[in-house]
Image (cartoon, rainbow, N blue to C red; front, side, top):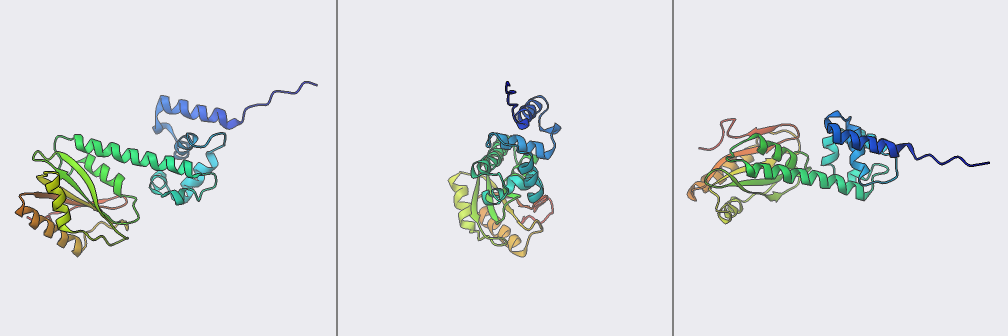
Length: 232
């Protein structure tokens, strides 16, 4: 008796359909789990990825939760290898670099939408506080964005001298201070306000302007300038 040909696993055709759908419609036409499936398909061969994709979303809460998770959190999901977790982190980092380049291409920057998008992407999901500075030239165009201090949750030690030394190094005429509150609560602390005043007062002696101080939370931000508390 002649054996019937072995049919291909159902997920092979599903992967191709997902790719075709993406190229024709983009991710706007996708369920979140389908977007995760498609991403994982580039790192995990010959496997049905719907279950691990849905498990990731259920455990980490959202696409953003997946992108913000660290490698150890991602690999806790069955079927997610270190290699697949690395791809997810790579996509997140490339997206951050893309937004940073968008910021640098702006003719002028004080507190633009591109700047906020970049800051939210770069800092919004971090577990520890990071203090960063955006350095600007005389036309308020971005020169560099640097993380000067990484600390534990609710604590970041920042030295005004370090901020201004880097400003002089970049020949910067103005700066925007940026840091995150991992708790998601973006109202500045007394320490945040004192630090902003110290940096602003010291910068004036060097003819460097401090345009703003942004505090980034999970889904919100606080601008010292917009709230009228930027030192004059």
